Amino acid sequence: ARHITIGAAQLGPIARGESREAVVKRLIALLRQASARGCELVVYPELALTTFFPRWLIERGPELDAWYEPEMPNAQTQPLFDEARALGIGFYIGYAELAVEDGKTHHYNTSILVGPDGEIIGKYRKIHLPGHVEPQPGRDSQHLEKRYFEPGNLGFPVWDAFGGVVGMCLCNDRRWPETYRVMALQGAELVVLGYNTPNDHTGDGAVDGLSNFHNHLAMQAGAYQNSTWVVGTAKCGREEGSLMIGQSAIIAPSGEIVAMATTLEDELVTARCDLDMSKVYRETFFDFARHREPQHYGLIVER
Ligand code: CDT
Image (cartoon, rainbow, N blue to C red):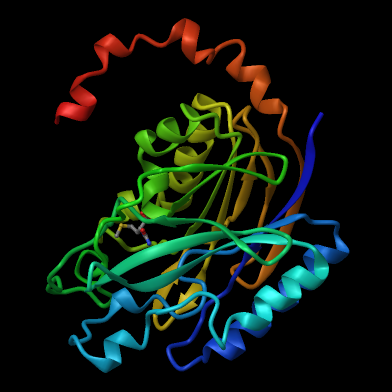
């Protein structure tokens, strides 16, 4: 067995005016709880340093740029890195990234994986961006991720970390089977992700009423069909008028939920996860080498 104790560090709402310093204090409080409960890895949400700013139309310029991090760590987040190193805990965290590549400015919805030594192990940039470029009429809260971010350009890499093979994704990515499969084909045993999921996306009560169900359905299927642990952490609760779902969960390769948050506030849930459990499924039902028939899957990459 290869056990690792993992914490899903759910966040309640972050107000528009809440400073990065104040949020980092909340993240550190959760990290200390995680340490007391023996965690080696803590998973924070997507866009975990600020409110979910894509709900507003903000013109290009300094007001918009202020939501992005040009560097990581930076002055505001360094205390989180320092505390994690002092406690010997690694973490995953999502944030809006402003990157300069080939002399051009780019905006990504990004996550990083940080080792227990406080060093960044890897970076992921969100590939499946939901929502719209233009504001939609009649909505109280917009979802303008397609306006504020470019699709990620790093693929779905995995890393040898925390005694296993670890991959990352972000929020809407969790609804797409390709996300998990591309990582599982590289041997992923643990997929970590954060989400911000408003419960009013379609405006159709019959669909929006299933927001919590679809969250778990997608992650449990991803875990089972790919023989991997999945840890999904929410930023949730009523944030600037938009209600976002919670139910952060740690899910085993069996598809079973092992631990789940019950509030819509800052809340840590933990589980002792045996990474060898991946093998049970990957050497039987989902032995990819023996059972996959990729010659019939071409359409997936053609359309
Ligand atoms: N942040 C994010 O990707 N949220 C979406 C909301 C629904 S689509 C507008 C999600 O898939 O949970």
